[in-house]
Image 1 (tube, protein in one colour):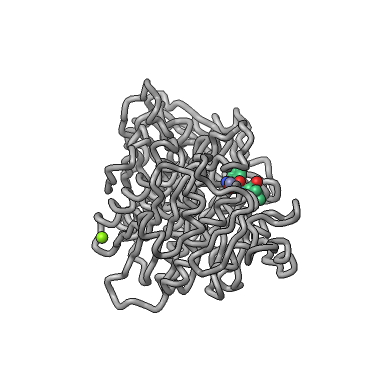
Image 2 (spheres, rainbow, N blue to C red):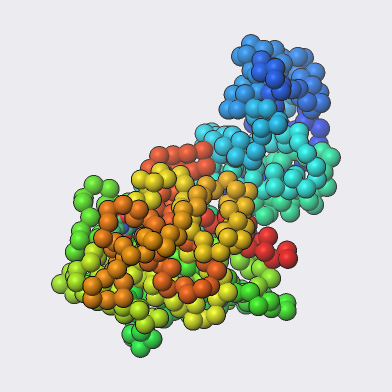
Length: 518
Ligand code: BES
Ligand code: MG
Ligand code: ZN
């Protein structure tokens, strides 16, 4: 794999994937993992597989006895483990229920393997994963990708600031695939590793403290990424140049801080005949959101280091883009600055002019994300983007509406929206579309400028924020993701610990791959 000097290795265990066709009763490993379905209709029993029966014979029927004793039915999440007492070289066998085959989807296996990885990452050194008995050659690819991703994401931890780090260890993971071409399995594993790596880079950036993950830090990483591939270039627009270009909205928010703001532009160009398509990925890059003079309340303010999760997503995606090889141009744009408090900052009532000429009345300095993004979005339009996706931890209202796991999405063009929803579904990232309702636009009216940065109503805050952004994308097909909920986890899940999740990285990569096939 590859390595960027700035990104700390936070996975304490290094996972090494292998493929094996050796008979299961001959493989020496800490644990063999089996997946079994539940009988359709007959909920009281599981469906044994050939492989299961074979292994059961080798351990003198003890495996099926263990399943009986623990009343294993194959229900989703049910588990039975069994020590082989040296009857075979593997130490332990773990059986995991997948529910009824007819109701099965990838998130079942993602959850199962994610929690397996998270609970075993510091306990065992090796595991053999068998494949659930399903489908055709085609879905097999997605299955191995999902399994690889879940193992890597489930075992993720951010340990940089722990005095006592667990020692780095190698976790050997073998995927047992007896009747599938080994090269195919290896390719799928590599793809899964790539997706997980991109997600992990985003997680690291989000989890990093704001005093380290500054705009300069993000800009340095962007430069590093560009250096790693001839297909990617990077341009950092410094404050002076930004002033000349007219990024007044972004600079207005940046004014309160001493740390230099960075307007980061990444560009990927395909080596082969370029298509007309140019996808722009815009990430909100507020490296810390104090609220500004409309200061946030003190509880949980520490979480506001995550207000650059959109930027982290863009950098995560770009870190693997050269390997994904999109068939069209991809641009990344991040207006990076913290939103701090000082005598130099904007105050309510101030008016700033965005890059596209529209004026914005700042009525609340805590609605800073949309102000900075007014410039990054209009820059992407001016640069000829034919499609725009933006990612922003934009509104607390989004958490009220959809909770912590689901992102709100908005689309000004239905087919684009459908394609992105499809990609999100495939990767198990939850999104829900909200309307860009014309009638709500009037809530963003300003008495003195073209638009106000907060609405004159307490309600529908996620929608009015999206309508604000829409003013800066013209008619370019555009999707806005409000990731205020899923970007940062307040509790651990099967796919990762508390903190940055890297939400959206895999959906974007999936979308780019699908589009590149055309
Ligand atoms: N970064 C916040 C939104 C946010 C809140 C993200 C909680 C994640 C968790 C954003 O800059 C903000 O403060 N928005 C304000 C807008 C309001 C002043 C119109 C909000 O949502 O309260
Ligand atoms: Mg380059
Ligand atoms: Zn804010």
